Image (cartoon, rainbow, N blue to C red; front, side, top):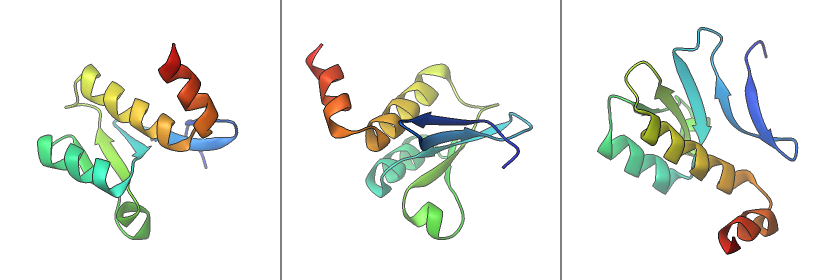
Length: 91
Protein backbone atom coordinates (compact mmCIF):
# COMPACT_ATOMS: atom_id res chain seq x y z
CA UNK A 1 0.00 0.00 0.00
CA UNK A 2 2.98 2.31 -0.31
CA UNK A 3 3.74 2.73 3.38
CA UNK A 4 5.51 0.72 6.09
CA UNK A 5 3.50 -1.60 8.27
CA UNK A 6 4.30 -3.58 11.38
CA UNK A 7 3.21 -7.19 11.71
CA UNK A 8 3.14 -10.08 14.10
CA UNK A 9 2.84 -13.50 12.45
CA UNK A 10 1.77 -11.84 9.20
CA UNK A 11 -0.99 -9.69 10.72
CA UNK A 12 -0.73 -5.91 10.69
CA UNK A 13 -0.98 -4.19 14.07
CA UNK A 14 0.33 -0.73 13.10
CA UNK A 15 1.24 1.34 10.06
CA UNK A 16 3.28 4.45 9.32
CA UNK A 17 2.10 6.94 6.69
CA UNK A 18 4.58 7.64 3.93
CA UNK A 19 5.06 11.23 5.16
CA UNK A 20 5.89 9.81 8.63
CA UNK A 21 3.70 12.47 10.29
CA UNK A 22 1.00 9.99 11.25
CA UNK A 23 0.72 6.35 12.17
CA UNK A 24 -2.14 3.98 12.88
CA UNK A 25 -2.56 1.40 15.64
CA UNK A 26 -5.18 -1.36 15.73
CA UNK A 27 -6.71 -0.89 19.17
CA UNK A 28 -9.96 -2.19 20.59
CA UNK A 29 -12.83 0.33 20.66
CA UNK A 30 -12.45 0.60 24.45
CA UNK A 31 -8.69 1.21 24.18
CA UNK A 32 -9.29 3.76 21.44
CA UNK A 33 -11.80 5.64 23.59
CA UNK A 34 -9.31 5.79 26.47
CA UNK A 35 -6.43 7.04 24.29
CA UNK A 36 -8.64 9.63 22.54
CA UNK A 37 -10.09 10.80 25.86
CA UNK A 38 -6.66 11.23 27.51
CA UNK A 39 -4.82 12.72 24.50
CA UNK A 40 -7.27 14.00 21.86
CA UNK A 41 -4.59 15.99 20.02
CA UNK A 42 -2.52 12.82 19.53
CA UNK A 43 -5.07 10.03 19.01
CA UNK A 44 -8.00 10.18 16.58
CA UNK A 45 -10.30 7.41 15.31
CA UNK A 46 -9.76 6.45 11.67
CA UNK A 47 -12.87 7.56 9.73
CA UNK A 48 -15.49 4.95 8.86
CA UNK A 49 -15.84 1.30 9.79
CA UNK A 50 -12.14 0.77 10.52
CA UNK A 51 -12.26 3.49 13.14
CA UNK A 52 -15.43 2.14 14.72
CA UNK A 53 -13.57 -1.17 15.17
CA UNK A 54 -10.69 0.60 16.96
CA UNK A 55 -8.20 1.62 14.27
CA UNK A 56 -6.68 4.82 15.59
CA UNK A 57 -4.54 7.50 13.99
CA UNK A 58 -1.55 8.74 15.96
CA UNK A 59 -0.29 12.25 15.18
CA UNK A 60 3.42 11.61 15.64
CA UNK A 61 4.51 15.26 15.54
CA UNK A 62 2.67 15.95 18.82
CA UNK A 63 2.93 12.50 20.44
CA UNK A 64 5.33 11.57 23.20
CA UNK A 65 7.37 8.39 23.06
CA UNK A 66 5.62 6.84 26.10
CA UNK A 67 2.17 7.41 24.54
CA UNK A 68 3.18 5.87 21.22
CA UNK A 69 4.84 2.97 23.02
CA UNK A 70 1.68 2.23 25.05
CA UNK A 71 -0.50 2.30 21.94
CA UNK A 72 1.86 0.05 19.97
CA UNK A 73 2.15 -2.45 22.82
CA UNK A 74 -1.65 -2.59 23.09
CA UNK A 75 -2.01 -3.02 19.31
CA UNK A 76 0.65 -5.75 19.27
CA UNK A 77 -1.06 -7.62 22.12
CA UNK A 78 -4.43 -7.32 20.36
CA UNK A 79 -3.00 -8.90 17.22
CA UNK A 80 -0.45 -11.40 18.54
CA UNK A 81 -1.48 -15.00 19.11
CA UNK A 82 -2.74 -15.28 22.68
CA UNK A 83 -0.10 -17.85 23.64
CA UNK A 84 2.71 -15.56 22.46
CA UNK A 85 1.35 -12.54 24.33
CA UNK A 86 0.87 -14.71 27.42
CA UNK A 87 4.46 -15.96 27.25
CA UNK A 88 5.69 -12.37 27.47
CA UNK A 89 3.48 -11.75 30.50
CA UNK A 90 5.09 -14.74 32.23
CA UNK A 91 8.64 -13.37 31.84
